Length: 278
Ligand code: A2P
Image 1 (spheres, protein in one colour):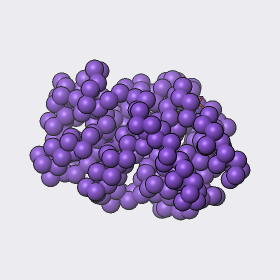
Image 2 (cartoon, rainbow, N blue to C red):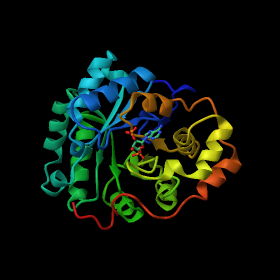
Image 3 (spheres, rainbow, N blue to C red):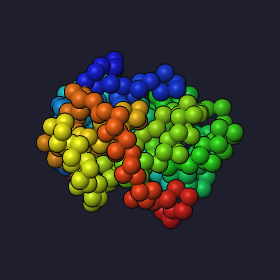
Image 4 (tube, rainbow, N blue to C red):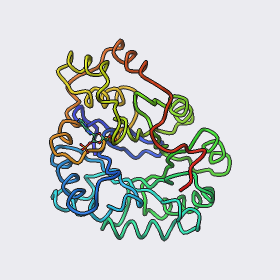
């Protein structure tokens, strides 16, 4: 998976490369909705799909991959260990079950989805899965700096990524900067402000988008890419899936980056990693 200007990739701290722009399938229904979205994305040029056990659509991700006709090795697949499986200490079995559902014999990136009680033990199991070669890279999601600190203290295995909520309305800059300072790449979820959000109707984004002849979504995706984040916008519409990948032919100016940075409200749209009840 070589990096190219139309589909750049990031080299993670263990040497594995990940396409910087992927398709997210949070809240994409299992069955045709997911397999169609995955197939359309792969046909449009995406080579990175981000799912999770809890999205209940891993089988359909596997189906979409097979429908695309692409080889398994040409697509980067992320999935995540769910909280119940962290708490009950069955990380390895949960990973094998995800592999079965995806219909693949390895996962490119496996993440602890939330810092649920027992995540420290789960991390040991993740390291074993990595050593066994069932996963090419391991990481975390929704980890705050204090979780990362604990992890780096108790384990010699550094997470390749921390996947966190990040968008112009909640840049989450402190966590981004902290993770990067530790050599951990950051992946932005809800990068467009999430389902049902109002970010894409923001007039500042609309004005910037008009100047570039692009959509607000494309401008936001470009903002993430230029910040050096890995970004996984979600859409179930083929036209938007294609549009969200058509972001490699323009560059936001520093002024426009600053204007987008100024939209930060400090309000997250998703759950708080220090206070969640699921
Ligand atoms: P849909 O799936 O109906 O296309 P996020 O990636 O931040 O979670 O945001 C996902 C939301 O943004 C979904 O509601 C999705 O709707 C919408 N969305 C994705 N791409 C675009 C786009 N290019 N233009 C407008 N809305 C979009």
